[in-house]
Length: 210
Image (cartoon, rainbow, N blue to C red):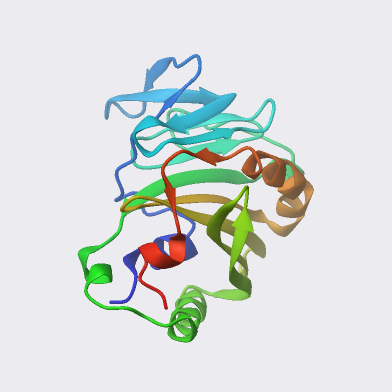
């Protein structure tokens, strides 16, 4: 039961059990299968209570589905939650979600080597291979950066940056087939460099790594 958040990270947030509260510029509301209003996202996205803000790639758009934010070069279908029709090179998702640090993480410290092993074994269990995983400095913040390759049946890649703000973890990732991932990685990296977190904390301290 180590790190519920890591499981979320490795599956690139397609489990939508986490609560995400946010706001964006020029919000317009629509309905997804009559489950309630969802914000149409473009330009930038923020989570005010966590002091988080990101400038999204130009022309990319998507939806705030409350528990997860999904953005792509051609937008997200508001009825199905999948990518709008696009060229193969644009079949990628930029995904943002948050999770409150589980209480179990506050009960004991864990060393980095055991954490790394857990990440790799979890990746293998879902058909992925960790290409790199480590703690890095980004915009003056201490964050975790994970790159992995998944498949078959569909060969793909994902990259995830994990930030912390108080007792919350913030995941920002890009996922897609290898061709589309490689084509859009630079745009994603440019967006990541715009991330600001007013209340940022050290990710290693947040997850009790020593």
